Structures are given as structure tokens and as C-alpha cells.
Length: 444
Image (cartoon, rainbow, N blue to C red; front, side, top):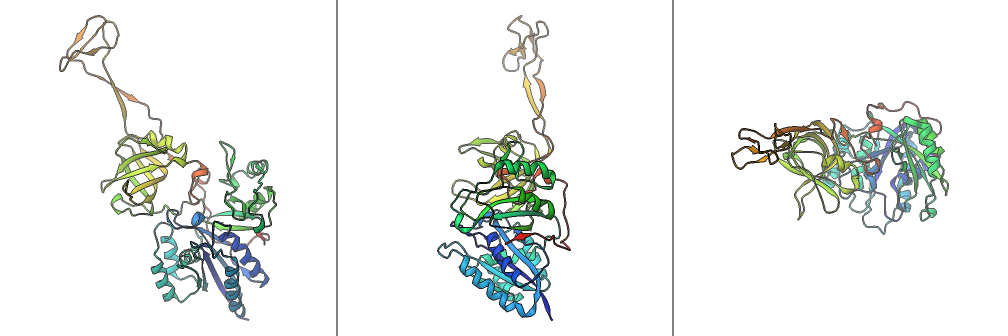
């Protein structure tokens, strides 16, 4: 009996009318379970470059990894093709699903592609050439852009830092109903599970963050550090309608994996994700729409930066910057438009060094301790109260305290990217692929 390792990747199955790539994963897992495949990993939810303009919700793609008997492979291909044809919303023209099947070891070219897809734009023409060279099985629709995410998901085996997400789903017929997530159950879960979960609730405002708002079948998603605690936490959440199915994903969410490249300003390109080491050149100001705008330079160029209105109180920190401050900006690069040049979308800011902030005041009269006034150009100062004059007096320098610290500033959790490493995960690192899966990691 010959067995074969298969990696199945798929992407771009979402639509505004309720189709969802991760929900489709539950359907495929259910069908593969019926074939008694041996799972090698939890389903991988791989988030790609969040700045891509044509991305689907969250720019997430899926990889499934398992062993099966060689005789089942053709049947599995047929199952995949039929399942996606039945599932996709073919009336939505911006859905371009792609499925890829890779046998055996992951080619090094796919691993390289997956790394690049985290922070750069990947042309579909490049992916088509890669498919021809590797001779992998594909099934795609529309402009076939979903193949980019499908291949990238397969190539990213999450050998470094990773997290988990328990995603609960409702029946597709219920997707027009309110999700009915019970906030008390979420807060209770968050208190009990403590630092084994993250980014599920804003602990400052107590705002629940686990439920999306669109018509998709996801009821909620709970993020955690390990499989057992994440499943336990997910089951503690109550909702009406109740979850019809659920699945545990292993993911690069919350790892900051998209910000591994330091790029000089002259080398920045549209839609890139990068860190920029730079110096503040202009004092930030708030413009119409509630966006905080400023300029930075690094010796290779100058570029506009923006902390946009949805980042909330993060803008307060940005507005306290002054020229001369040295910072590392966690950046997404927006292309130039008719009204502005290429702009750094600031999604995080690390203060490296703070410039001195000083104010200058007229000197104090030594006779009566009142503040003196200018006696005219090059004539020194005079006291209006007692008449004292001081021709050689100079303004007094007062160093003002800075309201910023040398630390990392992030937007509130509600405004963070899926890939952003939140404060709660600072210093945490999960590494290595699982050698054994927990007994209950899905109900499909």
C-alpha cells in the first residue's frame, strides 16, 4: 500500500454574499476525513501582505497537509473540483478562486514565494511560470489570482513563530441573522484563559473583538497560543445561533511576519510592507478626515507618513512627535495619487531616540522678579515694572519634558492588522511544526 503526502492550498473564495475561504476549508476537511486521511498538521491559515489592493478579507489563504493512499489522489482532485464549483459565488466577478495540489516535499521555490508574498506584490504572470516549472496540479477560475495565495500558503509551513485560531461557523442559511455572540461569555473566557489567548477583547475598553460584521458564515474567532487552550477558550463562547461547525487553524496571525524587511526610503515601492528607520522632519498635524500627517527622512529620501483616523488614540502619540525624533515605522506603502505622493501608512511606531524639546523665555528682572520685555533690536531687555535694563541679557532656555517614551506604540486592537504582533505577544515565540495533533481539533 503506497502512501503519499499531499499539500492542498486554496485562496480567493470569499465574496460579499457570504462565501468564505476558511468556511470552505471546513467542508474540505469533512470530505477528507471521510477518506480516512492522516493529518500531518492543523489547517494552516496564512495571512499574506495586508497592503495588496485586490486582496480578499484579511488576505488569508489556506493549506491542508496530510498523508493518503496513492489510489485516493485522483478522487481527492475530483472532490476538490466539485466542492469549489458548488461553493463559489460565480455571480461575483471579483472572486478568482485557485486550488493547488503539491505532492511530497515542498519545493524551495514555493518556500521563497511564500516569504515574498508576505511583503511584496506577486504578479500572476510569475506564478503561472512557477506552476509550469514545478508541474503542480491546479484548478482555478477567473483571472486565476487565487493561485498566488494557494501556492504561498503551501510554501509557508509555519516553522517559526505561529499562533492558533478557533473559528466557529453558522449554517449558511443563518448568515443574514445577527451573530448573537454573548459578551459576558467572551469576557469570562478572557479572564479565565488569561495570557493563553490574545486580541479577543480590548481589556482597556472591554470591547469584544472576536465577531466579524459581514454576511459571511463566521460567528466568531478566538486566538490563542496553543491548541488545547485555544479550543477550550473557543468552546466557552456562547452565541445564538449556536455554532454549526468549528475548526482549529494554525496561523501566522499576531506574529509580525510581514515586517521582517528594513527598507530605505528610496527603495520603497507601492503596496510594500516594511520597517523604515528614519528621522521626523516635520511636526505632525491633523488634517480633514482625522488623519495625522508628517514627513520623515533617512538620508536616501523624504516621504509623507499618515496615521489614519481608524487608528484612534494611536494618533495622539504620533502628534507628539517633533522634528529630530528617530523612529522605526511599521509601514504599509500607499501609491501616489492625484492629491498626494507615495505615503507610508503607519501601523506601528517604535521610538528609538527623542529630540530635545525646548522653549525660550524672556529673562526675569533681577530687581523685582517680573518677566522683562524686549527693549528693541540689539538693545537687550527692560522691565516695565521697575525700569531695570539689561543690554546683554539673553532668552532663557527651558527644556520641556517629552510625553513620549522609547518604546513601541501600536493602534488599538480593533485597528490592528491580522499579522500585527500585539503587545500581549511581545516576548512570546512558538516554533516548530506539531508532531502530534490533539484529539479534538474540529467539528465539521
